[in-house]
Length: 75
Image (cartoon, rainbow, N blue to C red; front, side, top):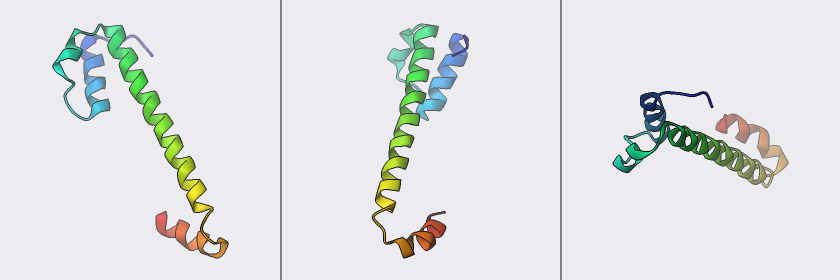
């Protein structure tokens, strides 16, 4: 992750969380804030990949003839 200012790192964390970070996080260094942002982004990507894999696994339980129409509906 590129080096960013403390303010930029705080804004990025706020964007990741979707809300203002807890007050205690203001004690973190720029690097720690950056690492936390990266950890959250990595966790979200991993979660999205797992959800996609689970959806595909569930989709294969649907009878073959219904998969096309259902995929269009789920679009």
